[in-house]
Every structure is written in C-alpha cells, then in structure tokens.
Length: 404
Ligand code: ADP
Ligand code: ASP
Ligand code: MG
Picture 1 (cartoon, rainbow, N blue to C red):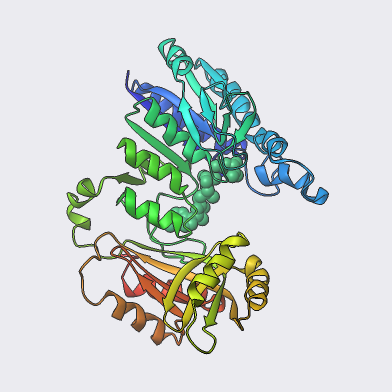
Picture 2 (picture 1 turned 120 degrees about the vertical axis):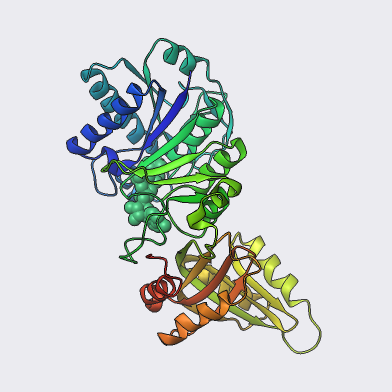
C-alpha cells in the first residue's frame, strides 16, 4: 500500500472553516488511493482555548512546582482534543477513521520529559487500521515511555512525529500543512516579499530551521533526510503544492536552482554578545570561560576565540548569570544585550567568491554595524543589534534578489 503522512499544524485546525479545508485535503489524497496517516497539532496558537501555550498558562503562576512528567501530561492534551475532533469530522464526511494517541500509535520514547527522543515505533496497529481502509489520525508531539508515561517531543514536535511515522511506515512522502505556502526565503512576518521556494535540500532547510526559521522542526528534517523520505511543506489554505524538500542531488537537477547561491535568510533574536579579554600575563582564558559556562549550564553560540580572549553569545535571559559567573572568576566581561544572529544560507555558496562582500555591502548601505561574523561552507552568520533586525533582513533579502 502507498502510504502518505499528512501533518496539520495548529492554525490549520483552529476554526471550523480551516478544519473543513483539512477534510478536503484528506479526501483528495484518499481518492488518489493513499493509505493515510494524519498527524495533528493542538488547535490554534497562544490564547486559543486548547493551544499548548494556553494549557501551560494554567500552571504558569505556580512556578516550577509541577514535575516534568506531569507537565507532559498537561501539554500533550491539546493534541488529544484535536485528534478526536478531527476523527469525528472525518467520519461525519463518510470516511472510516480512528484516532490514536502517540502511545497508541506505538511511538515509544525515552523518559526525557519535555524533550523526549523516539526510540522505536511499533507500527502494527497503524498497519492493521490502514488495511481495514481507515484513515489513522495520530496526536503529534506525543509519545509514551516503556513504563506507560506520556512524553512530549519538544515544542513544535508534531513535525517530528510526522516524519518519524513516515520513516517507520516507509511512506511515499510526508506533507506538512501549515499557514504559509511552503518554505519561504525569509520569515514573512518581517520580510513582506519573502517568496515560497519550489524546492530545497534537507540540509538547507534543517539549517534554516536550526537558525530560527520556525516553519518546521529541525529534528523532523533530520529524520526525513536519514530515511530519504521527501517532504512537502504547503498551506492548508490553498491548493498550491508548496515546497518540496529532498536530497541535494535532486535539488540540483532542478534547472531553476542550479545557480542559486543563497537560498534564504533566517534569524534568532534575543541574544547577548559577551566579550572577555585575557588578564595580564599568560593565561588559559578560553578554557576558564567555557568551563565556567558549562558548569553553570549556560548555552553558548557564535564562538570566536583569539589569543587575547573570546567573543561569544548567550541568550538574553542567561546574560546576567554569565556576566556574574565571569566576574566571580576574575574577568571584566563586556555584554551587549538585545542582538540578533542573522544567517544567510545557501547550499550553493560553497567556493563562490563575493558572498561576504555583498552581505557587508547590504548592511553598510543601511548603516548597520556588524558586531561579529562567522562562516561555514553553506552559511554566513552576522550579529547585529536587534533594532536593525528588520532592516538587516530586508536588505540582505533584496541584495540577493530572493524575492525573484
Ligand atoms: P504550524 O502551527 O503549522 O506548525 P508554525 O507556526 O510552527 O506552524 O510554522 C509556520 C510559521 O513559520 C509561519 O506562519 C511563518 O510565520 C513562520 N516562518 C518563519 N520563517 C519562515 C520561513 N522561512 N518560511 C516559512 N515560514 C516561516
Ligand atoms: N502543540 C505543540 C507545540 O505547540 C506541538 C506542535 O504544534 O508541533 O509546540
Ligand atoms: Mg510548527
């Protein structure tokens, strides 16, 4: 049987009208003779009645009193509501369907509550239901430990449920339905002329996702890449086929993108740049600094070390702690709060001269100072102050003609 996994995100399930469109996408693929596994997120976003953030708000005022295991029981509820409501709608449309929890669908995880890893998927029950001609609706974001406790896979984890199920079931494809027309060249909330890409490689999209493009969970992309299952990211609200995510080799076969150097821009805001200088005389400043950060569980990024010291970033919420830890070991760090790390990403930039020059040009033309930069063969990162975030993203988007 040809199996297709369809995953519907929160906004795709948040209103009666949206849910009617979801039914249309299910009916269309069923007519194409696919065995369908439909993965759902909790309905809506922050503030909507059964959204994950709304459930978490119920305990927000109690501090950290709820242990991680019980917190997972709460935050996984939204998906159960979605799956049951959608099951009712699908059946009302005359299509046989069942709804399963993550555990019911055989998704076994470790017990890292809140960020559990999938260990195994026992697919017999899904296969049985598909053989009986049913649409199988599965709660995203959820798994179960061997001892029967509910777990969740990390925020945005319904994408991971979908691709993990796709891999375990040897699906022909996984379709991620959301509220935009695919993977766009930039965050559309900031860059208004961001454009949907027709095709992108797993590594480019994983890179964009890790660097802040919240359209898909990076772990979901990694799983699809390992299993070599194509993904489509598309909108519930249109018939447009969206963006195909596949191997680099397949991407390069597409004439339109063969000469594409830069694919998109992404950003992570709310970071602080920390500069530490070595004190007088020879010292092991780098060792001391990064050991101190590790000891206090402060996650560091964008690291540049030099003989005289180190420059790196931490999240704004960790900045005060990082500074006081460094002072305690005798340094006088400088901290610049409220920065944004911008990534210019493209699988085709490797070995192409002039990309950095154009980045510097774009930012200089707008009078935006670059606080730090780094590069790999597929990404160039720059750090700028958050006040310049929109103008920097727009300038880079325009410089590389990403709207075209
Ligand atoms: P869902 O609830 O469907 O999982 P998400 O909110 O997780 O939806 O992801 C979709 C959102 O990601 C879009 O509404 C868009 O604002 C945002 N986004 C950020 N960067 C990008 C990008 N490069 N391409 C597409 N969407 C992006
Ligand atoms: N509902 C979960 C979240 O908001 C999972 C998801 O939507 O992917 O993080
Ligand atoms: Mg999402």
